[in-house]
Image (cartoon, chains in turn orange, blue):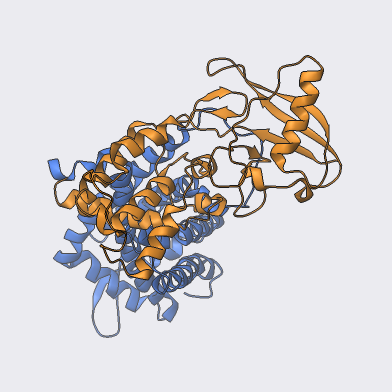
Amino acid sequence: MNINLKVWRQRNQNSEGRFEEYKVQASPDMSFLEMFDVLNEQLIEDGKDPVAFDHDCREGICGMCSMVINGRPHGPKQGVTTCQLHMRSFSEGDTIVVEPWRANAFPVIKDLSVNRGAFDRIIASGGYVSVNTGNAVDANSILIPKEVADEAFEAATCIGCGACVSACKNASAMLFVGAKVTQLSMLPQGQPERQARVVAMVNQMDAEGFGACTNTGACAAECPKQIPLSVIANLNREYYKAKLNGK
Amino acid sequence: MGVLSFLFSSSLGRKLVMAVTGIALIAFLLVHCLINAMVLLNDGGQTFNEAARFMAENPFIRISEILLFVGFLLHIAQGLYLTFDNRKRRAAKYTGNPGNANSKWYSRSMGFLGTIILIFLVLHLKHFWVVSRFHAPHALGEITYANGDTMENLFLEMASVFTNPIAVVIYVLGCFSLAYHLLHGFSSAFQTFGVNHKSYTPIIASVGAAFSIIVPLIFAIIPVVMHFGIIK
């Protein structure tokens, strides 16, 4: 199938970017990233600079791929990452606009590749549990009800790709932070640091320059792991409780 | 104040202010709407004028009125701040447009809808609130009913304002903005409070949708029926 691409090209964080148009012959069975591999081979053969884009596992679990396709992070399909989006989701002769995640907190490194270090710093501020080192503890020594484990796991499926920030009109990171806070606050291991954690993570989120949530729901609608909006409600509860306790 | 400073400094604190004041304003709308609905009794405005007198004279209502103003100011100031601040968080805009694929247009337009309501509110206060609270006593003219009760005739003031078709159009447009503002705001406030539950959230959404349609509809009907003389 013949595809027309309008791809965002930007040399580095400080340079001005612009769209460039390309034509690619792709198979409907290719993933979106494989179509980009074809484009890059073409560009290299022509002696041009290939398009920089992030990718790693290509099976939807690493959270590296990050393309805004026709205005939607990870493209038009629900619950898939860009690497698992296939060209059969498009039609012959389509013109596809491909842009990087756009948010002040995610500066462009090059072309479609952005720096998501802000997420790492939010995690470092409190998105962990402290444990004593030593012998591995028996997995069944702490009993957790199945439904609690399931709900915590649902939140834990967040791969930290940043599609929520990219989809939100305010570039808010609350679905990401909500998922992490929910996962850890539900489990016994997360209790000792529960209140300090949520305040530290929200402070770091604000300091990184993400916007405020206005409950439009775009984040949850575009999340490739379908993290529900209820994690943000939970984040609010956890934060207000901690604040009322003077944290 | 230290413990509450997060209400004006953190992103989550700011939205809590929006939700608390928003729910307070929703409660006010309910009272306002019930009183306005008395116009529809078509009794020459007697019930409505009696209710208006109660609202003007009851000390509890007058104190609540001050709180209501604080609520309005906080909601407006915080809302405008958040709208402009959030807009700055993405300096480079997208070229691709997702349309309504991932969110509702009115959820994305709360600042715009709120601004229309604010413009309407200024006009509305000038029309009725300033007149009934600050003008010289009996400036509106008094009316004496069959039971011997004499009171200010706010109903007549409404009838005279709504003879102007432009005023009627502005009031109806204000009600449209209010309806869409509420359609997002009502359930959004509960989400902000942390209420998101598989049984309760659908109920809140339904109640919110009903409120958002019925209340602005009653508000909007009154200028129209008074303009066309259906209610006199």
